Amino acid sequence: IERHRAERAADFPTIEELPGVQSATLVSNPPGTGAARWKFEVEGQPVADAESRPVAAGVVAWEGYLRLLGLTLERGRDFDNTDGTPGHEAVIVSQRFVARFFPRTDPIGQRVRLFDDEGNPRPWIPLPIR
Image 1 (tube, rainbow, N blue to C red):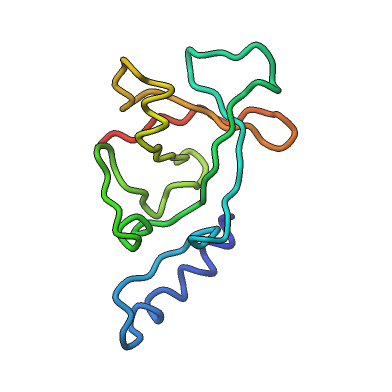
Image 2 (image 1 turned 180 degrees about the horizontal axis):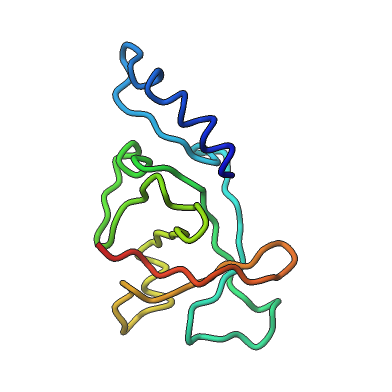
């Protein structure tokens, strides 16, 4: 992913300078083309077995993705271009996710972790603060 980021980052100044282009960003799956699915767990909310873990759908996105879609955040922070690099994992969750997993808790600073296709856990990721 790091090599891919570097290759695409070199294209951005050129793309954003094209006539009529107001904004540009990168995303793994453009709107309407589907999304990746990851099993995950919320810290402090263990599940009985691996098959029972909830599944989240999502995309890998660069800074400006939410703005490009006309979306605003209720709280927390937007993605930035260091997110997704080692040690800078990040997630942004929906209000529906918060209502389901943090009904009586402030979600900011809570942690989640994703699992790879083999069921191996990735590092814990705090929900964005800022």
